[in-house]
Image 1 (cartoon, rainbow over the protein chains, first blue to last red):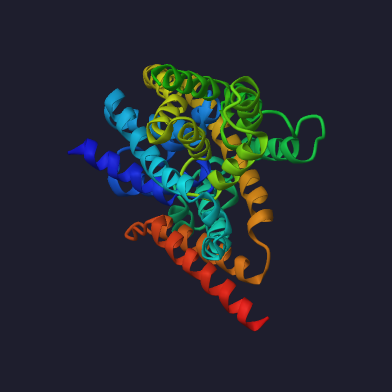
Image 2 (spheres, rainbow over the protein chains, first blue to last red):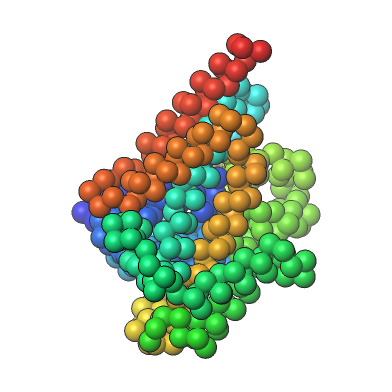
Length: 197
Length: 187
């Protein structure tokens, strides 16, 4: 029963992804490995679309993954699965708001959870960078085959450097909405045929 | 009651449409719609909900919507507000996804996504740097960050290993509790 599995996987994601939309990514890459419903490249494309359309990224990505797996019903099931734990947990907390805010145990748990969540997102982002900047399919292929200068996609590296500088160091552009950088990257990709086709 | 629920659904659907990216991008929109236009909660309440929404499981936008809805109309209100905020995503993404499915074989689309993927990688990197500055506040948290990053990378990379991120989440929550209590006893 694929709907049940879809609901269960997204329920788990909603329950354990802490720190907002991007925190769902490690769970989605894991889902891709486990089920083969979609590839890592598919997922990276879905993230790009989710960042460029209205709505919270986490919801958009869940909807997109669900749609890819099983059409509109899949999209609805995945989204409801993702939000169900939030609803349950927040409703409980809402009734004990003060006790929750003052709990030293909760505070201590989050002291450990915040760096872990950051680490999980980093581990999800590194393969995205490697496969978009080098001509390898995965980090595993890179580690087992070794790296040569011929593997580097120089135009992609140049684009990465430009976007990094624009989003971090140039005063006029660093506060701009991500959608503008995504649009810019799409145009560069088309003009310089970054996909190699 | 029905009118209030309808208002909750419409207001949060509106917030969903106007939010690009989620999280922090949503706060000013919530302030305008929920605090100023509707008067459903005070500025301080909203800041509280948002802070708790960030440090509880799930999507921050959904957590905040559930809070506001619950305050107005109990459990049903929380559910209706949440359905409101996810509704636009469902409509927009499913429409877009079916279009992209049809044109994804075109060379121009593949080249565009090759460029976009580079950008997504950098955007994730930027978010990690921002989160790192808040989350890594000493040796203990640095160790947790490094262990989880390397552990999760290894698990993602090795073809025969399938370790769920859940494992890292549970262990690090425990580590946080141990670190804090151990540090408190020492001091």
